[in-house]
Image (cartoon, rainbow, N blue to C red; front, side, top):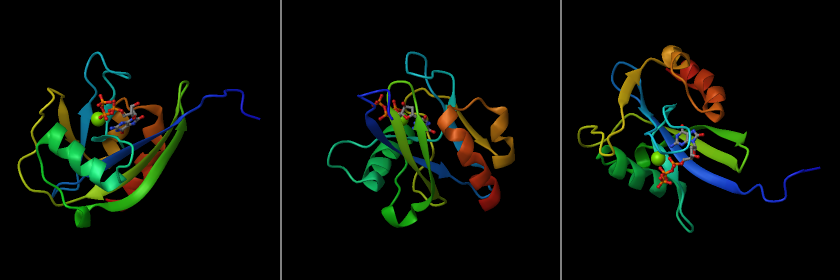
Length: 138
Ligand SMILES: Nc1nc2c([nH]c(=O)n2[C@H]2C[C@H](O)[C@@H](COP(=O)(O)OP(=O)(O)OP(=O)(O)O)O2)c(=O)[nH]1
Ligand SMILES: [Mg+2]
């Protein structure tokens, strides 16, 4: 029985951008945001009426100044995590191809890391089960 009446589902689309050396891009959540200082996969909330793939393409332009096409987004797995105030459902895509140079447009710290070193970076609890999938893939 759910003890919380208003556990709204929040849909967030995220991506593992993979470089030629099999490293994955993570970004540090800026001060002032929830979970500030944690390392996350680029992405963001899917807006009402928006498809997750298009949300991700939009977020990658806004946050990193890169152009990604839908055909280059391969679904890998998803996170489903009960935060205190909402339930996060977060599909994780993999992308190895994009146009433009990855640039931190929101002042966020960026880092390319091997999947087996992701655990050295504090990540939101929802992300921890995603790490083995990336280790298996890359
Ligand atoms: N982008 C992203 N968000 C994550 C990850 N793990 C995780 O728990 N989240 C959570 C944190 C936030 O509650 C939510 C994403 O919200 P956000 O604030 O980044 O959304 P947004 O990019 O649309 O930004 P905003 O316009 O709301 O400021 O998902 C992750 O790996 N990547
Ligand atoms: Mg975001």
